Image (cartoon, rainbow, N blue to C red; front, side, top):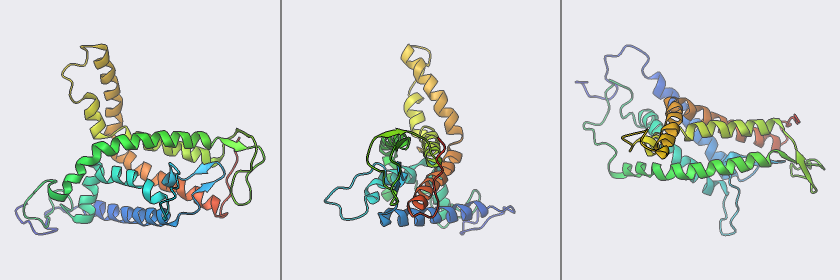
Length: 255
Ligand code: FES
């Protein structure tokens, strides 16, 4: 662009639609996550636990909602994700608003100064994988139903448990799948597994790494799609459990 003023462009298409849509979706999500995170209520029903509150721990020294502590990891993970960086730089900071559209800044400075915090993504990835393990445990728990049923307040009745599946169990398992596809398609993970190798067939270990790299690459091709799908589904999962807990909807026991 020779004319560098904000929004100046020769493009005739609806280039503004993507940043505007991204802005709307992310603002809605941030508002919902803030409301859910601060509420500290209705995050459990029967054997279900909202992913916003997992892993569930309530330290005695912490007077606020436990979700505030938990959400640091998933929010840090998504905020520093390469894909999300691209979309929220455009949507929130118009930096630039879209390809071949003028931006406010006169010079490209890269991710310097405060933005070096984006380098923490590699650490958030490890923590995100640990969180997936917690979600696996939650899903197993969501298949263990009390023989004496669920109490009117949504708590599990005391006594032995048996295997069972409700609609919420399926929603939680899908949440784990979508989050796994998003997490394991990470650009950093792809580089970590296969980026430093010159020869994929030189040893058994390298062949294995090549195999894992190919799987990650497949997921990585659709990283953006998994990013949006998992964001929407994790929100839906919380909403489902929340509405069950509030008595607004009733879970369907399938098995
Ligand atoms: S780049 Fe998106 S999760 Fe790592």
